[in-house]
Image (cartoon, rainbow, N blue to C red):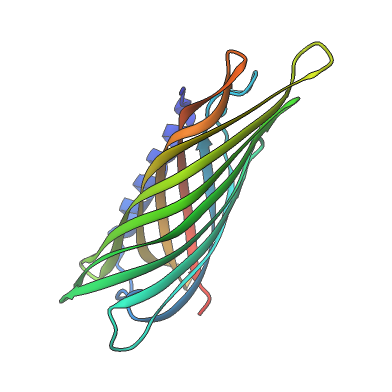
Length: 240
């Protein structure tokens, strides 16, 4: 899969920005106990397989709504989230529902969990459309610590999915080509988060990267799979 330089430059800018935020200081971490509801908005860059004359690389907007609840005196928390991303050639909606245990080590916290996960992708260009639907499980492990007074979260994820892909496209002779594919696949990702003040409003910066081992593709006149990378740089605000 070919990734354009401008998109990798975007990821570099996001990393540099996060590094700057880490040096500013923020309020102590508050995402381990109790209840949280958060919304987020940011830049989303899916780097997908080529489709017809489209490179598959695009930049758009990503929106999210997530939350968790941890009962007092218990180690297990319930987490859920909905993510919606859109660009000029791709659209995605994802849902996660997880159970996570957290172990406290003073100012540091180690966590691990698993649960249900799904993603529905729609990649299209003029006369060509590919649907990639993922359903399965997600395994997550995380570490929360602090640099000075600045809290930092790192989550590593492994997705285990059944992939169902379908294609409809112009065959160039007034008709349509169609195809389907099914496979078991994995995804690998990480999210780095840190708190900061956005014009006096408590906020959280998020940088994420997700590698999809198999994404439905139409190549050489047949259905196949190729890998994909998804970059995400967003700001998260606490609603509750």
